[in-house]
Image (tube, rainbow, N blue to C red):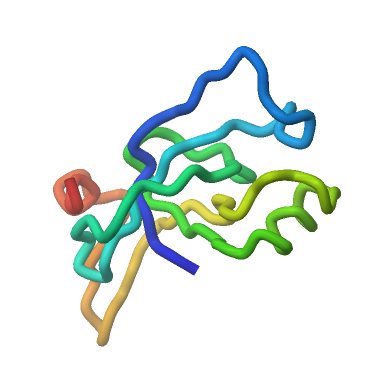
Length: 106
């Protein structure tokens, strides 16, 4: 599982049938300090995430295919949660209701 921030919505006129009812989003993986880490990941969205939201990404192709109900979908990452808050060692590093902290990570 990876913490990430939704950075782009993908719009396509044609896509694999397995994705027909699901949005595709680009997610920037983040460190626990909410700093960008690595390349953006194309994710199938199962939660209705919006731009700039922090999300939990599952990066396991077979599990994503299980969620889609097929073994044939060319997918290896999915948004499976929208993050409301993150606490590390009893310190709150992210709270969705706090606009200033919500802008962390870019």
